[in-house]
Image (cartoon, rainbow, N blue to C red; front, side, top):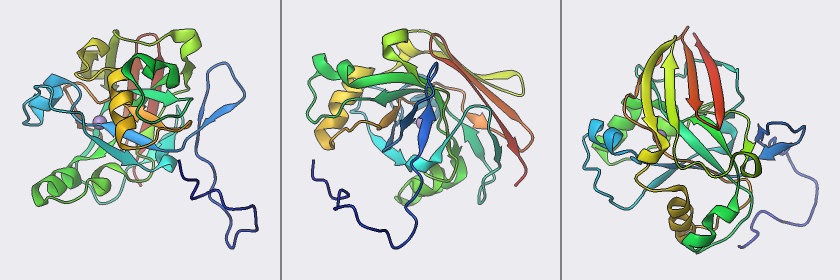
Length: 239
Ligand code: MN
């Protein structure tokens, strides 16, 4: 890919931004984050609850900024400009090897590991954007909107194709599904996305959420789980 950012090393006129990163289970080293891709409507029951026909329309993607990642056990202020802040529990695919036009049968070779993530959403702003034909970033790509658990290397956990995925808010189960409900599988998603953009090490893909999305209030604890991948807990507090 063109290295537009890889200018010869010189002094910066301002301090360069910190590299966003995710912890790796069993390692002192961390996983640097380049881009966060999110798959929309990748569970049929969630597509239906959002008013869409889940019949395998091609996957679509949106992004969050890399510095939206937040570590496990974070305490996070309730975000501004929303009255409907919602949880979406998702499998996170972490890319370790780059490529473009990646064939389906090679796609899983590009995965470094997996984590549990929350695609936190200002639903009112997303709905407004949909209704007005505007971009989703204000609803999806805001500060601290992507809590992610420590990554489990695929060398340890394999490539999950089934297993419970759930989220609790203050101890009550709100979303419950199974990874086998993904409309587009991990390999299909990587292969498809790589036709549109180069995939590079440090990219992560949030695989979409099962039905049951709903609100989170200040003072509430959000706990997510994916069988064989891990657990994620974050607490929201008044800003
Ligand atoms: Mn999502």
